[in-house]
Amino acid sequence: MSGNRLFTDEELKDLSTRTIDKAKQAIDDGDLEKAKELMDLQYKQFSNLHDGYMTWVSGLQTYIYNHYGVEILEEAERFAHEVEARLVFKFKPQPDEKKRIAGFIKGMHGHVFQPMTVLEDDEKVTFIVNPCGSGGRLQEMGGYDPEIGLAKIKEACNITFQQEDFPIYCIHCPVMQAQEVERFGNFSWVKGYKDDKVGPCCVYHYYKDKADIPEKYYTEIGKEKPQAE
Image 1: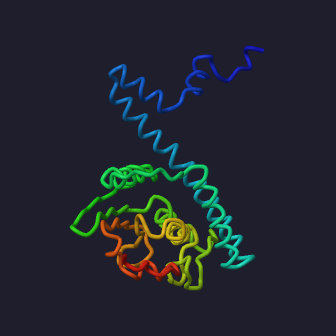
Image 2: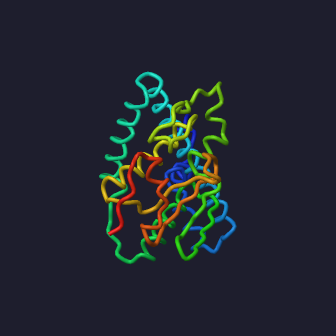
Image 3: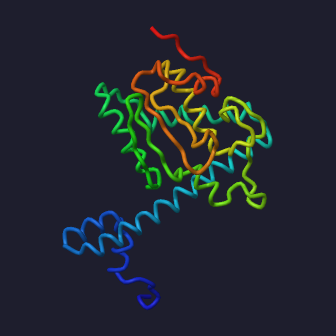
């Protein structure tokens, strides 16, 4: 029977070892070139699985929209994010504003590790993801080409930032923004788009004084700007 084996014991052990553990071992061994190769491999492994989930979600969204309409799509999206908030993105109060901002940006570096630029002026902190690690890349990959079949939301509404022909995967941004305002009374980060158009490059703004947040960010998700206290 041993002649029927495809792998040696050593090969099986290697297959059982996580790539991140191999990279750490390579660093401990002083083999930095191997560690770099393993980091690149880890990126490919992660992004491939991420993109599979991304297109899977988009396919489910498309089916719901095509068969049941935009209202049911919004209900489904809201339910999914409520579960997500309870299980994964749990709210953790952080009173230190600088640490709160830095923590969010550092977390976004895990968004398929896309290039990012962080800027600051007297009014706000802005970071730009170019391209967006999910919705933007999905467009670049041709996900909305007719032969693929992912939907764009035809009607302008609260879950499309009041834009027509809105890429279906990207509805999670206005939905999550609306849920945040409903739960906490205001935005933490405002999600925008370069030149006010949906595209591969996404922009986030943290306004130091919430009173400075332009009213359009509320109206485009169907909310009213809170009155200044």
